[in-house]
Length: 246
Image (cartoon, rainbow, N blue to C red; front, side):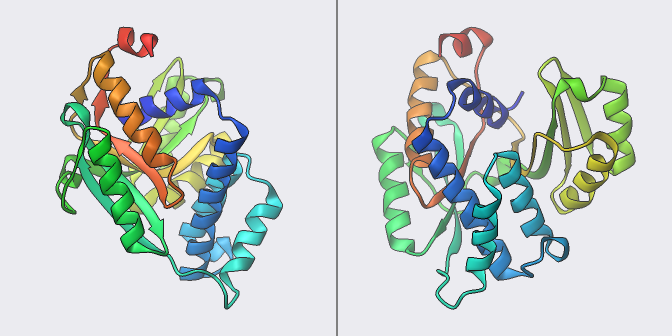
């Protein structure tokens, strides 16, 4: 399993405290506001907004928070956010992509650069590591939704590119531009997914030992704690033994 998926599992095992959950809700609401402001405020007419709303619901964001975020996009006082991607290398030479939404480019650039430096990494130029990843749509279903053959058949019929199943569940990958259509078709066939979002899928991974993983987790934790950072992806790999020690 690629690094981004393992990190999601680590986060899930750790559980989310109220403060962390509140921060997650805020970031999801920001994505909804930006998506609605850039396109139509009706999710049925705006694929990006539809996916943002779907992800928010999957993370148990309250309905009123979602509605306020959409309404906010139509107001004259709605903030203007720039979407900026930062790329660099973390401890052990792991490639890291940081996606941000900010109303102050200088503040965000300074914070991201400082975080990389303090946590043993190096911030690079745009494009310095993105070529090591593929932009994909990812849809996750629990194992209980069906056996491997049934889910694979549904994924193929929906137009997905790949489907991988394990005891932990089913991961379905699509072209980034097909995520909305494929997720809609799968929802009709299999029901609501656990997660539906765009990801950066590593083409190769860098294996880390326990010390390297601890340092990388500190970098990712610090980056994700910043309000301007929407998500962080890294192409790390670690053995089961190291993962257990974490």
